[in-house]
Length: 194
Image (cartoon, rainbow, N blue to C red):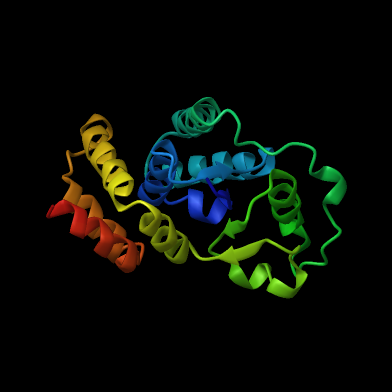
């Protein structure tokens, strides 16, 4: 099973995060991140919820609950001991050094990020590539379209608990249209018809 480091930028959008983590639950890949990523996610998730009208205390509590659930569901995902490597890569944004350091310590083959410009290939350690979430989704789904469809099915089953009930097709369409996962969802659609 391959290891992918998930940057905050790909964990922040809710349905995208749900899909990526559901793929991991289905054992398509193993996700990793750092405490710094989870802290960023908690901060930005609370801001997002507050900006959408959730009172500050409730937004902070929901964001903290999300991170706690991630830590529980993926108890082996948090890279530790990366701090000595931070600052040794010469990245354009020094604030991203922790991402590469944690990815290297965790043995990740890819860093999945929306900020490719911040991770130039020539500055990354051998064996680690920075890729966009659309490419990662395509590659992950191609490994196991059936498990990927199972991930979509589980998202659909959970959808009624926190919002309107959605079908597998509804979720596929949002992942295609909002998140640009057209290649990945074409493979999932093939599973829908079998």
